[in-house]
Structures are given as C-alpha cells and as structure tokens.
Image (tube, helix red, strand yellow):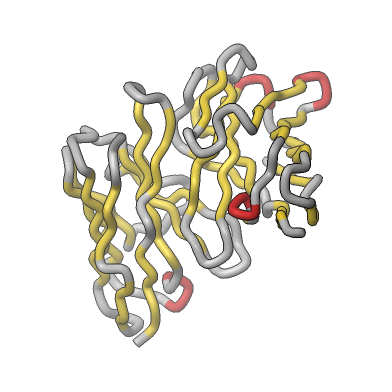
Length: 109
Length: 123
C-alpha cells in the first residue's frame, strides 16, 4: 500500500506570501496525484489533478508539480480564502482505490 | 447545476446498522463512478468506497471491507452506503462525491462533493 506523507503539518504564512506544500509517496505513483482544499464547515474541493492540472474554477496562483514520489502544491501569493487544510490523494490501479495524505494546515501568521 | 445531497446520518449504537443516501441532480448520474469519503472529528480524509458508472464493480478500503456496501439506483439517481456492525471509530462526517470523468470503473478524481451527513456511533 502506498503511503502519502505531507509536510509540513502546519504552515504559518501571511497574505501575499508564497506557500509551498509537499507530498511524498512511499513509492512511485507517476502523475497519479491530486490536491484538495478543505475549509472549516465545507466539503473538500478538488484543486489539482494529474499532479499539475488545475480543476475548473481554480485560480492561476495555484500550481502543482512533481512526478514519481515527490509533489508540490504552490500558491504564488496567498489570499485570505486560501488558508485551509490541503490534502494530497493518490489513485491506484494496482491495489484499486485511493489514499489521502494526512493534510497540511495552512494558517495565517 | 450539479448537486449531491447526503442524508441518513445520525446517532447509532455500536454494532447497529445505518444506510446513507446521496441524491444526485444536474448531471447524468449513470455516466459517472461515485465515491464515499469520510472525515472523523479532527482527522483527515479517508476514502471508503467506489462504485463504477454502471454499478458493476465496487471497490472498498480495507477499513470497511465486509462491513460497508456501496450501491447505486439509476432509476432515482441515488447513491447508497449500507453500514453494518458500526464501531465508535466510524464516527465521522460522510461525504459522497462524483468522479470527474465519464464511463470509468474505478474513476479518476472527485470533482463534485455533497455537504456531508454526520454519523455518530456511541452508546
């Protein structure tokens, strides 16, 4: 079973700053990785899929990169609504199903 | 407008059963794989189960395999999660989600989510 490890657990930044969130897979997952945002009291929202593709309606300040075992979600310039918890997710055909990372909480400094 | 509305959550005794429903509207329900995901209080997201677009194939997380059953009724555009032998650690918000691609067995990514229905397992 593939394990996704996100770092840091908490990231404290100010609006306008650049955020870099990491997701590391225990073995190669190719580009089979997505990122979701979860805000308090809200359902998750798909932000990035296939490692780098932005989902519908996601602002250009969000970008995903990486392949294999190391992935990054970058927010170029933080806005107030970006402070939330972000989860990476892997989709596996080999052991059919999905795995989420434990999440990174992006909080206002 | 695509919409998913979960229902059926509540407080239940350990060992009992509960059936969650997810009413879909605004899209062709029979064309998409569907998923259940939960989030326990203060915890992260956990994928539970997926049913293929045609209902022919189901997939489960090990944590619920043999206890939970996912199904769909295309005639009334509804997704179900039958939960048996419930445990306190099943306490969570339960979300249904639609896959982003049509005509898939396992699916790709989850692009539309309901607001969730809470389940509390407690004596």
